[in-house]
Image (cartoon, rainbow, N blue to C red):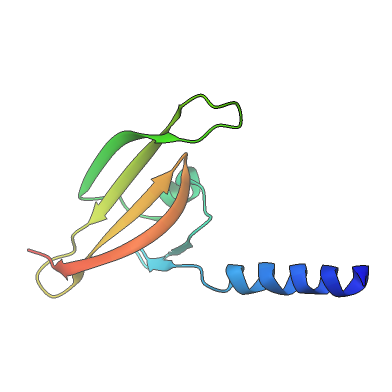
Length: 102
């Protein structure tokens, strides 16, 4: 029974890892969700725009804890889509695509 549970847990973790967002930086390097902000900064060029904010997160002791969220926007011109990389506490959480740039 324990072996079946362990196999189920391993399979579900592997399935979650398979859904990572990737982003090809303007210089050709590739970054993925789960990469740290320092890895992305080294691999990618400077973003066109950076926005920073703090968002509340739950805590195990009932106190409100604030985490830093950064959004890096890459605008590569009118023939390419705008991409926004969203970092939560220094980790790339998501890559969003917008309309065409300017």
